[in-house]
Amino acid sequence: MKTHKLSLAFLFCAGLPMLPAQAQNERSIALVLDASGSMKALLADGTSRMEGAKAAVAQFVGTLPAETRLSFRAYGHQSPTQKKDCKDTALLAPFDKVSSNKAAITEKARGLQPQGYTPITHSLTLAAQDLLPEEAASHVVVLVSDGKETCEADPCAAAKALAEADAKLVVHTVGVGVDTVTRSQLQCVARMARGNYYDANSTSELTGALSKAAVKGAEEPVKKKQVVIATPKLGKLRMKVLGGHHDHEVLDATGKKVDELSSVHTDAELAPGIYSVKFGNGVWTSIEVKAGETTEIKPGYLKVEPLSATAVEVLEPETSEKVDELYYTKSATTLIPGRFNLKFGNVMWPGDVEVKPGETTTIKPGTIKVDSNVGVLYFAVQDPEGQELGKGASPGHALTLPPGKYVLEIDAEKRIKTLTDAQRKVEVDLGAGEAFELEIK
Image (cartoon, rainbow, N blue to C red; front, top):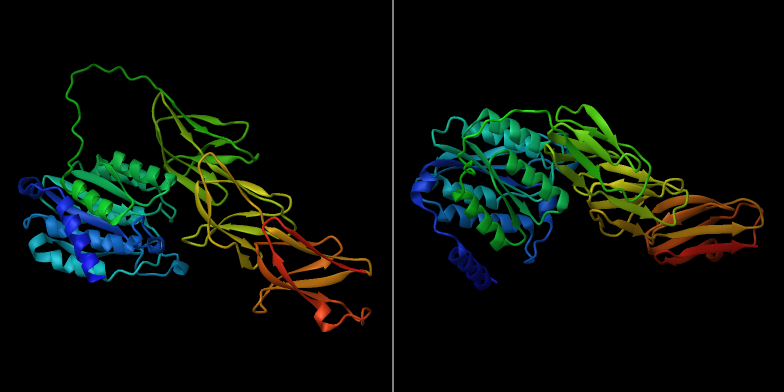
């Protein structure tokens, strides 16, 4: 195993671009690293995102010229997800020459344990503030994240404001194994702050992305002379509709409602700017609308069928926040593309469920019910360890549950004394989309 790690490190170093010392001395770099709970997930090369990031940081600081001024900030590492800490960020190494602080940065990165929220906006704002006293010609933030903002803020709007306040500021973003919506948000952050976006799906790609960001300056505007007569020109925000009849509020950068999108009203004409759209309790942020252009968003559609009286909670996997709830009169919903956890009463669907842009994802649970012609009977469903997962009544009441092994226990009441203990408890091996019915005559 040690030989394997050394060979990987050699390959990383061999693949890194040479970093010009003069270019590095012209800028101060604030490295901001995601250490939220989702960083425990695996990269394409089989390492966890967090371990890949640690290796990439070590390689990155080792290639920078000695005189480069660098700081290191992390977020999501101090508080567990349950605390919902939207201020969870810390400056782990203040600005100094790399020759003086690279060992400290490597050590601080190695000690990070991913666990909390993803407060991108707050962390980005503090990183920009860290840069203000720096005398370099360029203030560079390199922001590494594997997920979108999990707090009530829009990092794209924040990046725009920060760039307007500091003409030296450049923000480059690196997406680590990200989904479509997260990539779009990180691209918007970079675009608003004169930077570039880089995809990284392996440790080597992450290392290379950090190195490219370190030498990349702000995009140079094309020099031209022109006379402009400004006339108001709107842009258009369009939502691709797959199903549902709910209205989705369109919010401007201040959080004010400016329009609605639905299956009937799919287009909204808007002034150029950055907007958000609400889907249930979730908010799709960092949507840029440009003058004279159409920006299309493609939400996904989640169906759960069949669905009885059991309520199904749709949860954001990193924060466990409830995004929406489904029940027998509402068995489908429109969602921001991404991964979700589904909770059926007291039991979770095995693994997470991916909702893709512009596609319908259908989940097929099973049902358990009791049919009786001897009057009303009550029943409970337990897991094999005896934990109760839900209750029902016959006739007509069914429980919707994920595939798995369960124990159905009948409360036979006093009038059915002939049922034995073995008959009162029935083992059920429930398959996807399968209906299990126990009939009592």
